[in-house]
Length: 327
Image 1 (cartoon, one colour):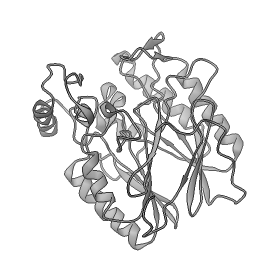
Image 2: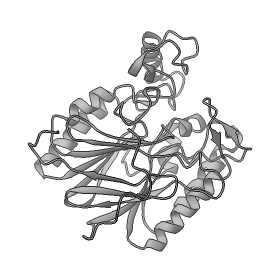
Image 3: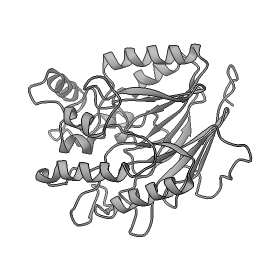
């Protein structure tokens, strides 16, 4: 289901507990405009202007506590001798925001630089080279940022055990010579392509521990990932390899209220059978010059309200009451 058209969501009369900015798939590169493999126009140089407008709007609004970037800050077509420069250029724009920005890996980030270098450049709040973490902006809410490429062929050294294991996994799931092609794969099996990835076993265990703690504290949890985790919110070819494993853990507890993602540039929104909202955010990259795609989200005790710019659809996400069946 596509997200609600822009302008249909009205601002709440109540004051939000906090508000945060969101943007996805900037995919900046200092190269001429091009097209996706589906033929959709991509505006590589203009995308950083979208980010600049986002930061300016968030600062002007004055109450944006933090922002979240949903990955792919630079594009895979960026010349590799300019990768570091391009990443730093985009990070410098995020640094002009008056609060912290929380980043996550996307596949295009990992086409450009190794994960160990990106963790430092993106200032991820971890005590190691791992790229998953959590934070709590207030006692009632907790945000969990996943590394959707923890188990993948991207970002790890070629001789790393994870690279070998992920390649073996893909060989079993995808018979195509080109592992970025979903040709011949049916339904959600189309997700088994090289530009996707999975949450690894150690991270799954960590996620379970975090959600158990959040459940005991009666916190609302927001799950953030570059890769979508529900077929209703994205194309099958854009889904996380093991979204089903992640959601099985989510359903053990009653605390996750929404899952946000990027990657599928069209965006989308659905509510799953357990009442969890899945909102895939529209990409900054595919905004024609003069247009934008970013937003801010107001957090209330019982809902989230996404207020988008022209390219990002407004979405009201009301929480299901505990123990109440979804109609």
